[in-house]
Every structure is written in C-alpha cells, then in structure tokens.
Image 1 (cartoon, rainbow, N blue to C red):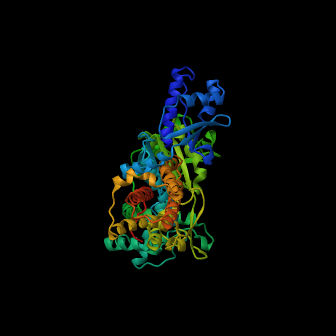
Image 2 (tube, one colour):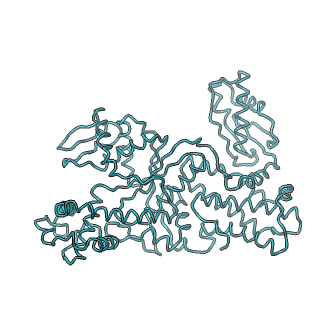
Image 3 (cartoon, helix red, strand yellow):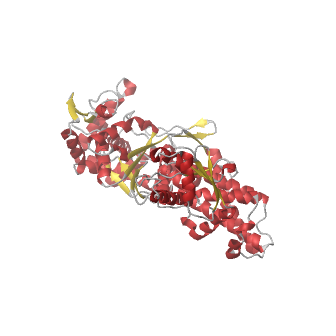
Length: 585
C-alpha cells in the first residue's frame, strides 16, 4: 500500500507540473509513512511541506493542489490535510485483504523489490586472520554480513560477497613459526615455547600433519634454533622482539622449505574457516588473497600513485603517508625502515582494487575496535583520486559468551577460546544466527547460552519458528478432521476476516515489504528480527483466541488463506536470516 500511495503522489506531482503549479526541475524523494494514531488516517506524507519553499507555495495550499491532482483509487477511502500541510490517507478497509492475495500470488518473492536497480555492492566481512579457528566473536560479523547481503539482494542490488585473506605479514609468520616449533617438539626436541607464539591445540594438529607428510626433513636442533637469541618476556625480555628473532631464525634455517611450513598452516586453517562458515550458512563469491596484491605489484602501484600525488614522504628510514592532511589524526607508515610493506599499505591497494572492479558501493564490516582505522582508509582513497564516499564501514561490537555467571575467555593467541563450531554444536545454527543479529551491530551483546538452548517462548528464535510449526500443524489436522482446503473460496470471502486479531495480522503482514527495504537500506537486520517476533506474537495471539478449522466453509477457508500467508512471510523472513522454518517442534 505504501508503494501504491507513493506512485499516486508521484502522478499527482506530474499533473501539477503540467499545470505549471510546480516546475519541471522538482524531483523530490516521496516519503509515505504509517501514522502512529489511526485517528489521523493509515498513512501520511510531508511532501507538501518539503516542496512548499522551493515551489513558493503555502504548504496547506500546495497540499490541497496535490490532493486535487491525485488519481482515483478504490483503495483510498479519503484524504485529509492536517497541521501545517501533512496529507493523511485513510485506506478502504477492504483494501487490507489485498495483502493475502499478493502473498499467495508471489510466494517466496513477496517482500522483494527492485529498489537497488542492479547497482553493484561489494560487501567484505569476517576476514579474520587465518591464524586459528573462528571463535564466537567472529560469528557475529559472519551472521551480520551474510544477512545484510541477503537483504540487499532481496531489494534489487547486485551483491558481491568477499573474504579478504590476510595470507601475508607478521601474524602469518608467527603462525608458521609456531607450527614449526611444535613440529620440532614432535620430532623430539625440547625447549621453552615462546610466550608470544600461537599455543592452541589446533597448532599441534597442523604440526602433526607436517610431520606425517615430511618426517624429520625440517628438523634442526633446539640449540641451533635458539642460539644467541634475546630474552623472552618471562625472563625480562621483550616478547615482540623475541618472536621476531625466532621468525628470522626459522626463515634462515628452513630457507626455501619455510614456504612449505607457512602454507601448511595457512591452508589447513583457511580450509577449516571455509568449512566452518559454510556450515554456519555464510558463503562468499570470492576469497581475495592479500599475497596476490604483492605478487601482481598492486601495492607498489598504489604507493606510486600516492607518491606522484605528493602524499608520501620519508622519515627515519620509513615511508609515511600524509593521512593527517586528509582527516586522520596522524600520518601513517606504509613502508617500514626494513623495506617491508605495512598492513595499511596492503589495505590501500585492496580498497583501490575494489573500486577498480567497478563497484558502486563498498561495505566493510569491521570489529568496533577498528573504528580508528576508518579515517586513514578514507584518506588513502581520497589521495588516490577516488571517491571515499563510496566506502561504508559498518562496525560490529564484540559478542561476549556467558556460561551461567562465568564469562568465557576469547584469546586466540593463548588458545583459550570457544570456537564458532563449538557454539553451533551447543545451541544450533539457527539460534546462533538469530541471536547474533537480534540487536544493532554497534551494540555490545552478551550471548546467553541457556536462553539460546531453551525450548520456551522466552527464546525468541524458538518463538518465531514455533509460529511456523503451528501453521503446519493446522494444515496437517485439516485432513485428519475431514475438511478440505479451497483457496479460491477463501479468497472470495476474505471479508469474513473481521476480528480484531485478524485485522492486526493483516496490518502486520502488509508491513513486511517496508521492513525489508528499510532493513536493507539502513543495514539493520535486527529490524527484520523485530518484525518476525511481532508477527509471531500476532499469530500466537490469534491462534489462542480462535478456531481455524470451523464448520463454516467460507470462514474456514478465509482463515486458512490468512494463516498460510503468515506461514509464507515467516519462511521468507527466516530465509533471509539464514534460519530454518521447521514444520514440527
């Protein structure tokens, strides 16, 4: 109905242009919203207020002109002017039944639109370093990113989902060295494991695979590996300097074999991440390698452009980017004094690569702790001559996991964390995804394990899925009670649906397309969650108050058409969330 009213207003404005009441250059965005008070009608628009100043008209007079130019439509009972120039629409009660017809006609496509008109959006999310399994903190970004992508696709955007693989740099060197050191232990060497290496059991598993495949080909004695190294942190040294020297020693001793160890760790963990995300319902169109930016010269090319645009300078042996001139709090190093590129240099090249691929909008989903990174990336795009407004960074707050009164540790380096796979095994994929997107992404969330596992109405995902299962139960009982379903008869008698509960359901069903569009364009999946909970509440209330399988053929089939419409919208919404719609619970 909202779209229909916006079309009527648009046609009225065109008429006013032909009458020279409005000028041809006026092309406003028309907003129609539901009223909060039914006494003021069902929908309202402020278009007359928006256009009044530019059109040099009194708002109320312009509202009268618009109303006079509105095409006749049987769905509109009457139109009134309120306040300074608001236009209120009162809808014909019979028009409320059209939503049932629409849902039955369009099925899984109900709620979808072409709002995006095929514009290309690249959405990059999770992109966790392949240095260990995904933990529950990563799960929130995975759920949020995949649902945002689904919503944008449903509203007519072309969406390209991407995972940026940090397969180069220091963290990967720490992983490779950790794998090699555990491999040495398996080979019989004894030593104190570095405090800043990766300690998780998964590292031992990779090391065992390395040993099984290559035997003792990569063994060097502990005395050779640790000879003349600086002190580690527990002994009064610097753990960062210490691990860097161990990495250098590993590269020196292994030489060309270092890449074998490096790739063993990278590929094993990356395959685990891919499998984990697929099982979580999150898929990608591309896994983009950071190493490819080095191999094809993209980083050097991007830095060359920055240099030619006079945004680079040398200081203390390093190369710096003048990001402070473009909104960042300080300048940033892009090439260290040892000649190595920084992570930031890779990110500059990566974002430039995204734009060169022709995307209209870039969406990066980052952890909230990366907030300070936004100005420097936008500064780099500006310095490259690109439009930084094309980049939208959405922040996801950390998700804390609680077991009763105990908060669970999330330290990847120490190996003391709960993996996303473990969470799914405990609460199920549906509950995990639902809980992750239940709140705004920028809000901190505490993941309540006991609630997520409970089979009660207090568990929101159970509550929504149970509404779908209840509809399925009614349809199963239909045959058991000797009744038949006649959709045509039901459609011809939708006016039988006149109770307070039925009117509430019809109103909520009609809002679904609006919710999808708003959730997509505002990148707020929680709006869909809120809607489904409201629809489930309306249905459960209706279920408890009325019998559906009544003797009256007209009423029974009208009600069956209504609850089947509810069932379809629940399926459509849950599908966008990547959550199942069980037929029995």
